[in-house]
Length: 224
Image (cartoon, rainbow, N blue to C red; front, top):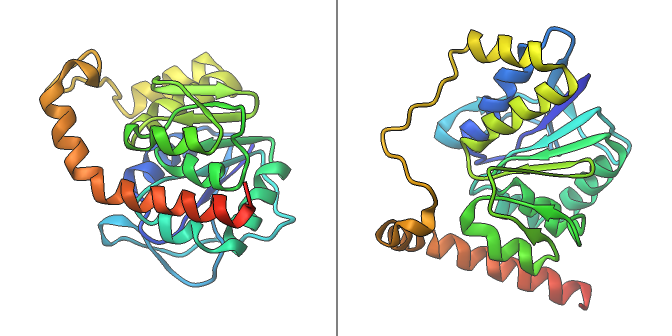
């Protein structure tokens, strides 16, 4: 299986490296980093990456993975980027998104009527873009697989490995990387913690306002 990871400026590092590390450990799979532009990409946490391939509208992969992050906003304002990503998604067998990578799909018009999930801060964004948002860690609808914020990409990757490389391979990799989460703080749902909800809402308020403005822009541009 040939799996391509989209990289663009200011993606969240774990959105990329969590699933990438897991897929790299499947012996029969090949992974690569791809971009819509040439030259080094500076992702979150100051890491520089050199993509192996520049995407075109004819690019196709067995699986195409789109990470999220604050850079999603600037990336999505470029209509050439969205045109290319839409084509690659339609050409590819599977499309996976981590965190707000799903917003890129929504702005490409690919999530209308689809069941999806994303970072909680972007639930209303995807709803406005025609998706049916489900508050789950991972969601699969046809050939589209989406997950919640940041660390959920690891769970999405294991789900994908289990389904398409087999239980034995998924179990081997889980043991190999000693993936046995034991979070310091445990909650059943975010809705159970009103105080934490307010903290996160304040933190994401500015970014969410910018994303809402972006949705307004694309809705007005499309005439819908």
